[in-house]
Length: 425
Image (cartoon, rainbow, N blue to C red; front, side):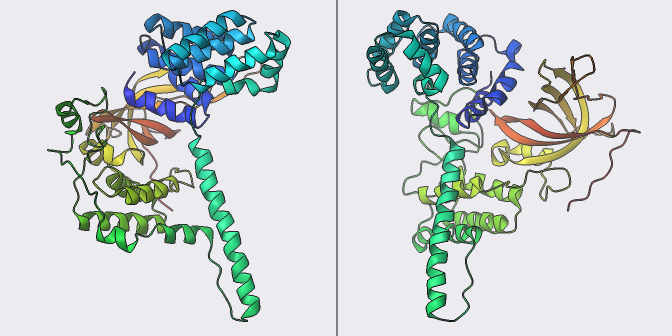
C-alpha cells in the first residue's frame, strides 16, 4: 500500500474514525495483501469497534509477515484476555516487555491480571464496562480533542475577557465593543515584532530543488520512506523544500492570514502549505498549523468552492496543494465498487467533452451509500455512468511525487451528455 494512504488511515485512527478506516482499507484488500502495516491498521481498527473476530484474523495475517511487534502483541493479548486465555496473554505481555521494557500498557495489564487473581468474571467485567480499552494499542492524542481544547480555551478566554469588559463598562459608562472568538484568534495569529524581524530558521540546510528531499536524506544516511520523496514533504532532518527569503515568508504568511479573514480557505491552504514546508521559524510554522486547523468550517460543496485549482497547477507541485479541494470535470474509467459501497475509479480529467485529456487521476470515495429494498436486501446507491461526463469535488492527497483524489461529491447529468454550469456563491 502506498505510504500516503496508510498515513491517511492512521490519521483517521487517531481521530477515532475506525469505520472509515475499515472501509478505506478493505476496499484495497486485494492490492495490499502482503503489507504488515495494512493488516496491523485493520486489526487495531476492528479491535476498537469491538469486532474481535476480524481483529484477530487481521493480526494473524500480520503475524505471517512479521512475527514480532508491540502493537501486534498488545492487540492479540487483550483478545486472549477476553477469551479467558490468561496464561497466553501474560506471555504476550512479557514478550512486549522484552522488546520494550518501558511499555506502560503491558506493565499495567500484568498488574491488573495479578490483582484480579486470574478471575475471569473480573476480567470480563472490564470488557463489559469498556475499561479494557486502557490495554488496547495506544493511538495517541486525538487531534480533534486538541482542537476542541484550543477552541474551548479561546471560549474560556473570551468569557473572562467579557467579564473584564462588563466590569469596566459598569465603572466607566462608555460603550465597549466585545471581541468575538474568531477576531481574537486571528489577532493572536498576527506575527510578533520578533517574528517579523527573524522569520526564518536559524539553521537551514538548503536543497538543490523541489523534489530533492529524498536525495538529501540519502546523503546523510536517513533516506525518506518509499512514497514520500516529493516536493511537498520535508526530509527527516527537517530540511525545508521551499527556501524562502525573509520577505517571502512574511509576505506568504500575511497573504494566508488575509485569505483566512476573507474566508477563502482553499487559497489560504496553499500559502500555509508553503510556510509549513519552508525554512520559516518554528513559531511561525506553529501559527500556520493553528490557522490550518481553523479552515473548512463549512464543508466544501459544488457552488461554494471560491478558489479552484487546475490539474496543470496541481501536477506541477502536488505537495503545495496537499489537503486542498478541487472541482474537476472529466469522464470515468475502470470503476471498481467494493461490497460496502465504496468505490475507486480513474478520472480522465478535462475529457468531459472528449476533446482534450489533461491527465488521469485515481479517485477514491469511501462513503457508504445504501438503502434497504423491499425484500430486505441492501442495494448500493452509488451509480456511476462511464458513458457520461462527471464533475468531481474532492480533496487532494499527495502520494510520492504524484497525488490521488478523495472524492466528496459526484455529479453527472440525469439527461443528455453535458454538465450543467454551476455558479459560485
